[in-house]
Length: 402
Image (cartoon, helix red, strand yellow):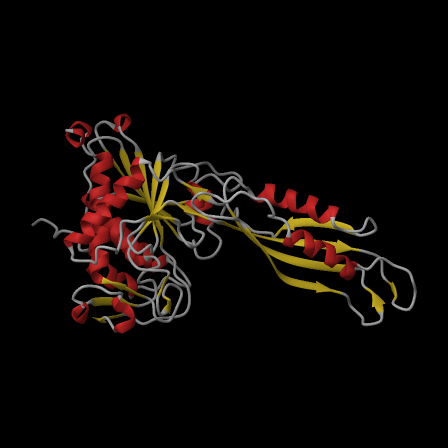
């Protein structure tokens, strides 16, 4: 007896009820068992990543396409529920009175996208190139799995080496081609302590005035990125001094950086150090460092909006949305993504972030929030989109061009 076709909605219902916030073991086991049921071999590698591959008979005649998302989720706990959309969840959908939704932790971030990617992967029969499913265990924390999988951690090598990547995140079915990077750093100012009554010492807290001026003007004259706009540098925490009658010897400023290409984490650190040094008295020591982190920071990435991967996803999303009756303005747009993701590790290879659901809607936060949900029709449309995208990129090139 043949195995029934994979149902992304049923998979999602079980996935949302499978814990994955403290450990992804149960969720990973569920995915591996699903792959086994459909006779797809998989491996658990690189600290808990799941890899599976489908290779055509002509692997060199097409791209190596990697589909990726993450297995982990975050607080707060949102219990599973399948029901009708309330007013805040309808989003202008046609037939809103009977719009079914799935609520629960991970419904849109990122188990809904996972269901869509898995649906497309299982259905795919590549006629050229090859297809890899790569699922990571800790995107919501340190991304150690993805860093090891892509050779970005010391002593590791790139196990993917993809030509292009489709990354599952809640994008409202839009094809997201870019995202800002996110770095965190500290500006350490060191002076000389002295009694506050004396004209002596070097005041590190007073020197923060110049350092903050350097932060405020750091991006003056910077060119806006065509997709992401300007970078942003924000001082978020300042600490200094130890006694109210003492010239303080130390002051530390924490900064949050939202970068745009081609800025790298080290390039940012070095440039900020130069800017602060120039704005700070000579008797004050300056040290600028990136916050210690076990894996690389997410750097900004961008993909040419005219790349064939982008067009394949956007076109497929518009067709799929129409087939399930979504509003014409829902899905298929080409735009940046609003959060940093492991897509950063795949750059500079062409990368598109895509999936059902939203980071936030008109009523407020959705992902990482107590009202996390995804519309059932969007999960179905996302699965069809992935299926159409894989067929367009890995199908018969002669048939596609005829």
